[in-house]
Length: 67
Image 1: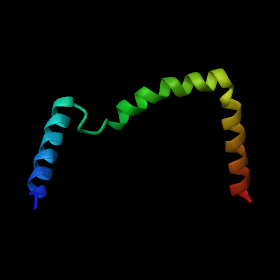
Image 2 (image 1 turned 60 degrees about the vertical axis):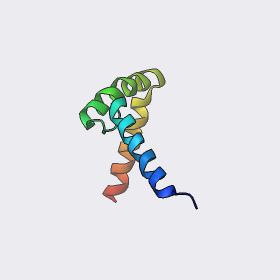
Image 3 (image 1 turned 90 degrees about the vertical axis):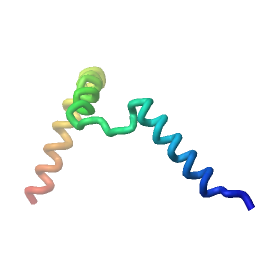
């Protein structure tokens, strides 16, 4: 029978080493993620006229909660 546990451990170590070398092993800081998303969100709001939709939905929610 083959020694699969040893091979699995070696592969896992190789993946960890590759992830560390790749530089993508950690998570992105929330402020960095927000800084990446906000310009695109602002562009979509301007292009598709989304501001009115946001205001309409917010007023509907406020009205519903007020009852």
